[in-house]
Image 1 (cartoon, rainbow, N blue to C red):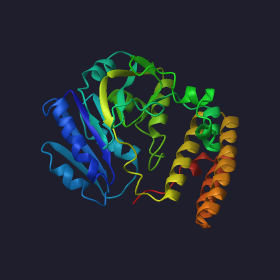
Image 2 (cartoon, rainbow, N blue to C red):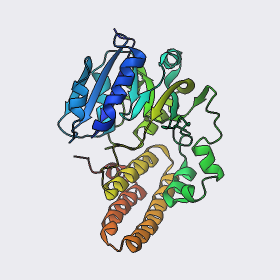
Image 3 (tube, one colour):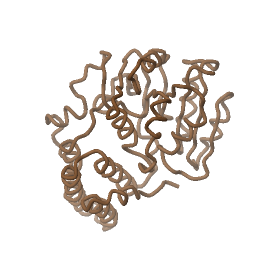
Image 4 (tube, rainbow, N blue to C red):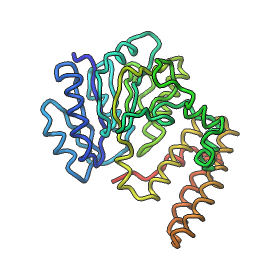
Length: 317
């Protein structure tokens, strides 16, 4: 049995997946790892790029059911006890043995390395975060974290106090570069596929792991380069908004108190309505109003205590 497996979920990733796979094969070796790429019905030449790498296994989905479903399918296809989740725009710059050693310790659910940008700078505020509470999600929904990035709630949420050169127990590393124990995945029932097509499924997974008494660790000796945002660049603005707010509201419904979820829902309605009006005047178009109505309906459903409606985000085709 291979020591660990790698699962990469792709969607229109032709420009990124080749370099990602080449880095995996170079840094971890063909004999030590099994690589599975789950393609969510890409319209470009992603699958051709994958098939051009000997030893890499392709699972070609006929529909795009989202990242969580793709990750679950990839993990089910492996027999390894540890799985490294990678985004297709991530390139390993080192081996990952320290993450394996960390995950083998009792009580550890997952481990992550240091994500850097194309200039080699740590992706502060994104790579490692704390679990978002009511205050953080309210400020996100109102857009205040973008206006006042140094506010204490945002600093705590985005771990702006983190020393990126120090190994530490953390709460929520990005799912773009995350090693997990298969036993943890089994115990939690996998990634929650109601988070579709993407956003907040990794946060939810690690929150459930923490709530079950397991820990997550960060080790900066393992480094990967991350480009960021490649899959969403071709997605229309409106669809991105509906998907992102759906994930946020779904997370709030699952992990916040009823009062906290209501507060976040109200903040979504107020914040997104204000941003929509600004966009209408800026673009001189009424099209954003249709997007706003969808987001407001999602928030109203969460406000009324019907979280199952919140999961009804459009699936990317």
